[in-house]
Amino acid sequence: MAENHGMVGDVYFPAPEIIEQAHIPNYEKVHAEAMADLPGFWGRIAAENFEWYQPWEKVLDDHNAPFYKWFVGAKVNIIHNALDRHMRTSVRNKAALIFEGEPGDMRTYTYQQLNYEVCKFASVLRSLGVAKGDRVTIYMGRIPELMIAMLACAKIGAMHSVVYGGFSTEALLDRINDSQSEVLVTCDGAWLRGNIVPLKEIANAAVERADSIHSVVCVKRTGEDVEMVPDRDHWYHDLMALPIADPHSATEVMDAEDPLFILYTSGTTGKPKAILHTHGGYMVGTATTLKWVFDMKPEDVWWCAADPGWITGHSYIVYSPLILGATSFMYEGAPTHPNPDRWWSMIAQYGITILYTAPTAIRGLMRFGENWPNLHDLSSLRLLGSVGEPINPAAWSWYYRVIGKERCPIMDTWWQTETGNFMITPLPSVPLKPGSGTRGFPGVDIDVVDEEGEPVGVNEEGYLVIKRPWPAMLRTIFGDPDRYVRQYWSRYEEQGWYLPGDSAKKDEDGYIWIIGRIDDVIKVSGYRLGTAEVESALVSHAAVAEAAVIGIPDQLRGNIIKAFCILRDGFEPSDKLSAELRDHVGHEVGPIAKPTTVDFVDELPKTRSGKIMRRVLKAKVLGEELGDLSTLAN
Ligand code: WTA
Image: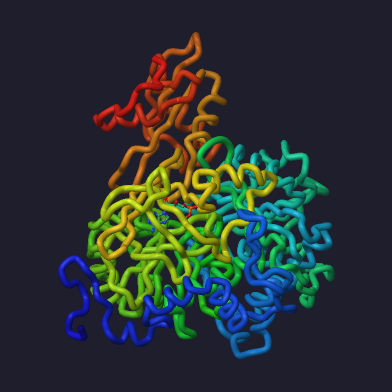
C-alpha cells in the first residue's frame, strides 16, 4: 500500500508515516476492545492520562438511565488537569495560547502566565460572591480574557454560560434569565472586519431588564467609550489590579459529576435549551478525542478556528488542548480582513500544524481563488479538520489540494453540543472518503435505523442513533430534565438509544454519510439556529401577525433562512418592510439569524391542530413533491 497513498479513485489512503505516527494506528482493534468492555476501556484511559483527587468507585452508573453517571464517586477538577498539574513540569514554560487580534496585536501566554491570570480572576469572581454551582454569563469577543473567564469559573466550581458574541440583546437576555446568572463578564467591544461590535452596549440593554445580574465585569478591548453603570459595572483591569486578585487561589475540589458549564443551543421547538456538561466525563472525552483524532504532539501548533462561544470552542479551544499541554492559536477577527489571505499568512507566520474549521469558512475563502493561499508557505500543516455540516466535494478537494497540498488528511468530525466531543470521525490512520466522517470514534456505538429501530439497508436513509452512553455526553438540560428525556431519549425509549436529530446513510464499508437535520434546526454557515427563535423575533415586530421560517440549501452558507409572514391589519407588504423585518431579527437574535428573504403571504400551511407545516413550505420553494398532505388543514 506504501506507494498507493493519497487519492486512489474516490478514497484517500494515508501515507505510511502518518499511520506510524498516529496514536491509534489500528482502528478496528481499538474499537473492538472498547465495544467489548466500555467501562473498562474508559476506566483505563481515565486512570492513565488524568489526575484525580480521589478515584472512582464505578466507571459507569446506568441504573437511572438516561441520567447516566460516569466516574462515580471520583473527585476532580478539570482545571487541575488543564493548568494546575502543568505547573510541576516543563509544560509550565510552553506557550498555551498564541493570540492575534484583528488589528494585528499579538499576545502569547505560557501555561504559567495563563494559570496566573486564571487564579487571579477566579479570586475576583469569588470576591464578587460567585460560589460553587452559581452561573456566570460570559458575552465577549474572541480574546484571551474569554478563555480566562471560562477557566476561572471552572476553577471555583461555578458554571459558565457563554453566549456567542454574534447574538444580540434578546438572545442574551433569554439566556441570562433562564440561567439566573448573577454576574456577567463582557468587553467594551470586539473587532470584526475593521469595525467594532458594540458588545457592552448590547449587554447594557439586556442587563437593564435582567433582574438576576448584580455585577458586570468589562474587559477593555477596543478602548471605545462605553457606559459603565456605577456600583454594578467594574473594569476587568481595575479588579485584576486589586489585592483581592490572588494569584494563588485554590482550585475547588469537585465531584466528577458536578456541572462544569451550560451552553445554550437550538432545539426542535421553543426556546434554546441549556445543555449541561460535567467535570469528569467531559474532561476524559474531549482530551482523548483530540489526542487520537488530531494526533496531537508536543510540537504541534493547533488552530481550532471556531468561536469559544460554541461547543467546538469550549471543547477544542479551551479545555482539551490545555489538558494535553498543547499550544493553541486564536485569532480574533474576520478571515478576510484586511485581505482574503489573513488566515494563510497567519498559518505561515505561526507555523500552524493543524487547522480545524467549518466547510462554510472553506467555501467563503475558496471564492477568492488559489492565488491568495499560494502567496504563503503552508508547509507546516500536517492535518486538517472539518466540522459543523457535511463538507461538499468542491470544498473538500479545494481544502485538500490548495491548503493541504495533497499531503494532509482531512478529519471530518461529526458531533454536537450535546455529545461534548467528536462522535463520528476518522483517525489519521484510516482511509477517507470525502464527505463522510467515516465511523464512530472507538467505543461510540452508532448506527442508522428506521422508525422501528431496525438497521436500514446499505445506502438507505434513516435516523442516526447512538446506542450506548459515552463519558462526555450531556447529563441533562439545565432546569428541564423532562425535556432532556423527551427530546433525546423518547423516540427509541424501549431500546434506550440517544437520538441526535440527524438523518444519515451507511455505505457498504460501514462509513456513515450525514444527510441533515430531521427537525426544525437550521445550520446557517455552520451556526445552529432554531426556526422558533427566528419566528418569535419576527412576531415581536408590530407588523407581523404570524411567521414561519425554513432553511433552503445554499452553495456558500450551507443553508439560508427564508421567512414567510402574515401581516397584521393596517400593514402593507413592501420592500421597505421586508428590509425592516430582516434588521429586526438581526437586532433581536443576531446578524447570523437574519432571513435572506422575507415573503408576505395570506396564509401558512398548517395541520388541523394548528402546527405550521414547514416541510410543505420548503417543498413548494424547492419545487419538490409536497408529500403526505393528509394532516393539512388548509
Ligand atoms: C451538524 C457542532 C455533517 C449535525 C459541533 C449536528 C455535521 C449539528 C457535522 C450539531 C459534520 C456537525 N458533518 N454534519 N462533520 N458536524 N454537524 O450542536 O447536523 O452546533 O447535529 O455542534 O451540526 O451542531 P452543534
